[in-house]
Length: 171
Figure 1 (cartoon, one colour):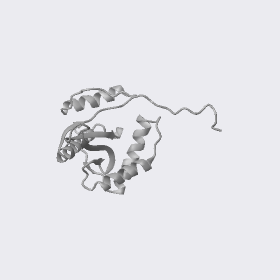
Figure 2 (cartoon, rainbow, N blue to C red):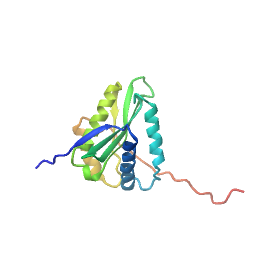
Figure 3 (cartoon, rainbow, N blue to C red):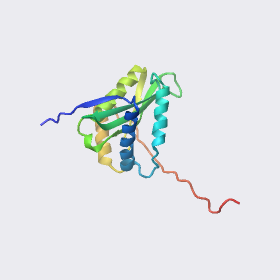
Figure 4 (cartoon, helix red, strand yellow):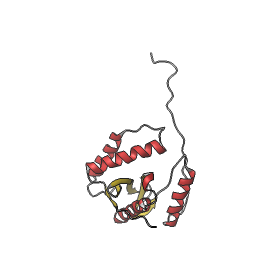
């Protein structure tokens, strides 16, 4: 049996869209990065940067709705390489609500990102998966990316840096 859903993906263009991204980002934070602070004003500030880039040449954010409910988002940037004037597009953040992970939301968000990158003249897309506590899900997404034509060419490595509290109060 095939599940029929009404899937729509578009660039974040309204305050309603950004508020939906914030709700999804809060879920993502709880699941994948509870060790970090969560501040919705940071997301709103990023959205303001996107709005200032009126042609969305450098920054973008896509949101997916399934049956008019927020289902996922993808944040991306495009910029010149450090060593070349050619453009590289990078997926910065990509999240799909667990309720919608079996209805092609991830795949279609990537397709929207790819089209945006092509229109910006990008010669390469860099994307990846970083899920610390769910290696099986990370592998599943990695396999989807491989099927989409993104071979694995490296890996992420992270190290938490914490600020040490001074042993003595400053005088």
